Amino acid sequence: MITVAIDGGAATGKGTLAQRLAKAYDLAYLDTGALYRAVAYDVMNAGYEADNEEMAIKSALALPADKIGQIQSNPAIRDEKYGTGASKVSQIPAVRQALLDFQRRFAESPCHTDGTPAKGAVLDGRDIGTVICPNADLKVFLTASAEIRAKRRYKELQLRKIYAIYEDVLSDVIARDKRDSERKTAAMRPADDAFVLDTSDLTPDEVFTAVAERLEQKMCGK
Ligand code: DC
Image (cartoon, rainbow, N blue to C red; front, side):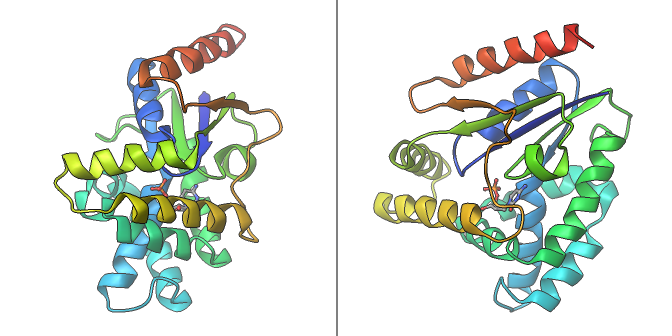
């Protein structure tokens, strides 16, 4: 069983990298941010503030493990307001505990979206290498300057025809990183044995090649 942990801040390219690795090596993929986003979506659409503990815990405990594919591919949760909401619900320790169990079960018995078992998993998030899968075969932590990340996110929003102001996107990226890295439970940080890669001046292909090289070394040693 191969487990790959990809962590990093918002818009560092984690999702793109994790999905490419999963496809190239036939591994199951879990976007763990989508779980927090789905909780925020539920809570906010029920008319509550994202940090409403009771509602967030209820929603996290009810997330259906057999609907991971649907949760991850729901375009509605990609809205920036659910990214910010997710960062808020992720501060609640009982929400993290409920989602920790969910994520560990996935890493231990990974399945592709069609339900077929996989030989391993790629998980991306903030605390995969430090908390969820501390024994992962490969741990990667992506970084990039806040300005570069905001530019990437801004471009992505423009492509999706979503109106945004660059300065707002930049302040959101900075605020989200601050909240995610300063929270009391499972704060975002690289694991001591993580391969830390600054993607500011790299193309997605260059990031993939650098990480795939390391993954193949690990797989050869297994
Ligand atoms: O990766 P993302 O932007 O979709 O994540 C949204 C928020 O969810 C992020 O700001 C913090 C939270 N999150 C977390 O706390 N732990 C994870 N493993 C993944 C996401």
